[in-house]
Image 1 (cartoon, helix red, strand yellow):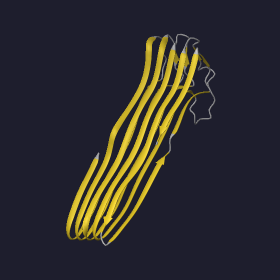
Image 2 (cartoon, rainbow, N blue to C red):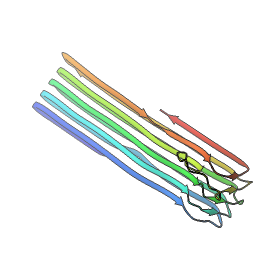
Image 3 (cartoon, rainbow, N blue to C red):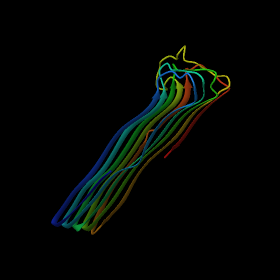
Image 4 (cartoon, rainbow, N blue to C red):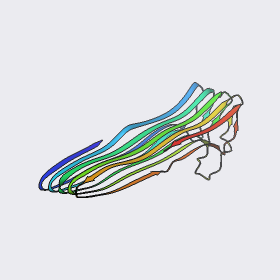
Length: 273
């Protein structure tokens, strides 16, 4: 979190305030080897960042009062859970591969100015990019002991930008911009990655005629900018720009993988705003 507050006054009151937060994180859980016997096998990776904040406050007063203010949050990360390589798994009834990603970023800017000439110029920007991979690789083989295989990816990605500007005086001018961007890429699969052209494996087979296999995505993404602006006086001028971008890519699948099973379910769920 980053917080910046500044105030100025006098014949000419000028304030410049900014806060920036940059976060990069990589969390990986994996199995890259053989298993000969176990009651259950779970590979799980979790990433939880519910409050990534940048907050800026600015105040200026005087004959000429000017505020320049900005708040920026940028998050980029990778969360991955996998059974990889050419692992041979035998004597295991239940296998689960899971990811659970939650990232919420907020940029907030507030400015108040008053005087004969009052000017506010501010920006709030929030960018949230996540890559979430949950998979059983193409070279992994699993024997007939298997009764359940669950590959489950959960992702929540949110970006909010809030900006409030109040300028009052004989001339009150406000210029404000709020930008939000969310870009999650969520792949949940068995076999070959969805964005790969490589061939499947001739040896990595799942041969479990009594098994139930589930591949499931639960994805939500949210992008929301907000501006509250008030400019008063004999001449009151306000210019506001709101930009919201949501680039969400989510894939659940079984891709170029040889499987024998009792039941196979592939489920992709998305909730985007």
